[in-house]
Image (tube, rainbow, N blue to C red):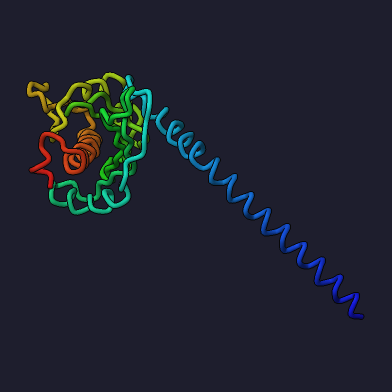
Length: 212
């Protein structure tokens, strides 16, 4: 009986040791692979944003992004953008690893068909591009917010509060509204302005003092 107990204890001990070794090995593998996986996820996400920052080649996560997003609710309320939100932000890196710009995704809940999500690129306090990521606007009217002719007019605009006009944009901070889709145009402009306000407040944009 004692011999049987001794054998059982020995087998249990061996099993425990094998389990501990396996767990330790798995932890090492996870540590080794985590960083490449995280970088791959960043790059995959960035591919979708390259349309707004064509020169971008390397991207990085924004440190403290969750806290920035949490604080932005009050920022948007203060700037007449209640209900808007930033959903994502990436740093754009130069060849030497310095941050040269940002890509920011933001939303407005006030589209004719509901939420509109957009992304903007910003470098040197100017928009490098703009795209509508998702919308449920009326076909042939509000859906034109995704047309290149509408989206291209944002490129080169200053990273300041933008407005829209129905009578032809003349100021540097104006865009032309979509004909017959004022609600959509307003929601798109809100989402863009939310991204700009977020940039100003967190990344030292030209109007950062006013955005705080």
